[in-house]
Length: 362
Ligand SMILES: Cc1cc2nc3c(=O)[nH]c(=O)nc-3n(C[C@H](O)[C@H](O)[C@H](O)COP(=O)(O)OP(=O)(O)OC[C@H]3O[C@@H](n4cnc5c(N)ncnc54)[C@H](O)[C@@H]3O)c2cc1C
Image 1 (tube, helix red, strand yellow):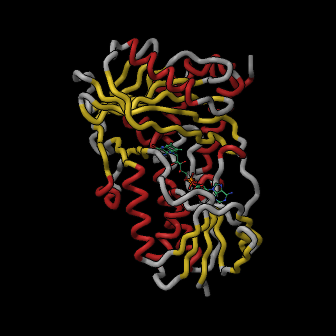
Image 2 (tube, rainbow, N blue to C red):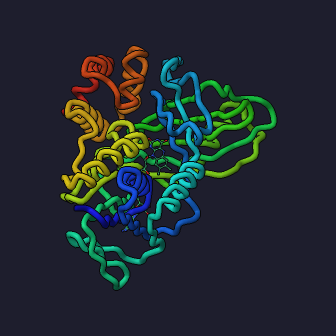
């Protein structure tokens, strides 16, 4: 019978697993250990295509009815009647989940120097504790290895005059590829005619510096004639695309494959996997979960491999796919909800000769 559970890593997945455990079994003793402090919360926004995540409604910051993609030779707007692109502010999300955990009696140990797992034991800064179950939700991008990295930094800006359309999120304005960064694009999330989060993202061999990304943001604004604005908070991140996973029976979260390799989306997968993991722990089963169908994994890995092998073709491959795929196939594909037929139709939109050349490095 499971009575005491320890979770290493109190990030998105660790906190979500703790919450689901205490919802499923309120008398459980759940302890979380992290090397970070409780505050400030990680500076981030979480976006996703919302197919009806009603529990998240109170923390939604903005919804977009349309998304736009563009490159040097195409521009495309897709309406989202049934799955608006939705933003959650990290602060609101982390406040809500931590409050619920405080009320339900979860125990926290923040700011730890070193946390080691050893079967059912956890060693923290010279002390050792034994649990019925130990879960590893820790992830540190600085020690991870991956086929590519989704590296990004951005900044909130407020302009004097109205320059943005708050009904439309610009998911990708594709820029030239380079040897280090097969894909490079702007991501712009306007929340009002005068306010937007402006980010530059690369799919690159290694995370790029914050100053590199921010200078691309400022150049992009200048090219659009947006010269008069104030800057606010920023966000920066590096998400593994095709993480080289180590054998770890206790792993959940990023180390257990919640990040969709070809897109970097992980937020909804983290919440869904937390429910499955908690159910398995409460019924004393293995915590392993499969979030994506195997064929989606193969397609994603081929795409990443092509970008890595042939960085100069990145913009062409990405543009071909985003220009050619049908709306009704592309959005479920990006959201990780595509059927095999929908995924196939998106893959077929990728320029085939370029893809074969990229995969074979010709
Ligand atoms: C800035 C940013 C924006 C993102 N935006 C989106 C988005 O819009 N949509 C989307 O779907 N996904 C997004 N993601 C991707 C994804 O949702 C996140 O990476 C998600 O946080 C992964 O959850 P996780 O629990 O695995 O890792 P994390 O939330 O990163 O948690 C890992 C935890 O492990 C802790 N830790 C690290 N090392 C140790 C150690 N040695 N011992 C103990 N604890 C340790 C860390 O302090 C952290 O608290 C974003 C990621 C970032 C970084």
